[in-house]
Image (cartoon, one colour):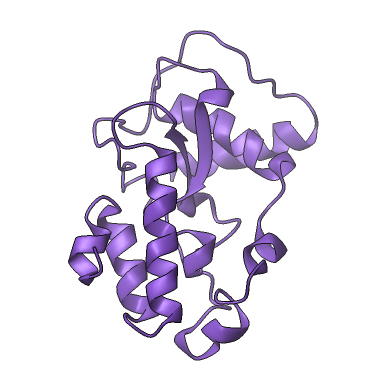
Length: 171
């Protein structure tokens, strides 16, 4: 609930143009970054887009370019990213060092604007935002080819993206 309240405040301030992302000292965190490369599930549990189902994947996620139709603008995600960097207590507060990532990716029907599905994923470390992108694509391709179900892919990536390919049997 603290992340939601903080997120709402960050969005309100961001909309008003009153939030600025600057390098500095991180404030007290409400989420733990001890789980990296995974988010803290109490702050970022993931969320699904109810408009994407197994029965409509060939008119949604399996259509090239579909994610661009649901991806929120940076004017929405940047205030969330700024607040998330504080919430997670990252020492590095440079926003350019993070991707405001969807835990359940848009290409698997993750909720585009739900703060519970968004978190500041670092570009540094052994398994980074770039590493996760490759997992997302492989899972989407397997779902669209009928190798695994949408539900299996979503569950695997939501629980632990680093093992999602092995859990689903495609990696």
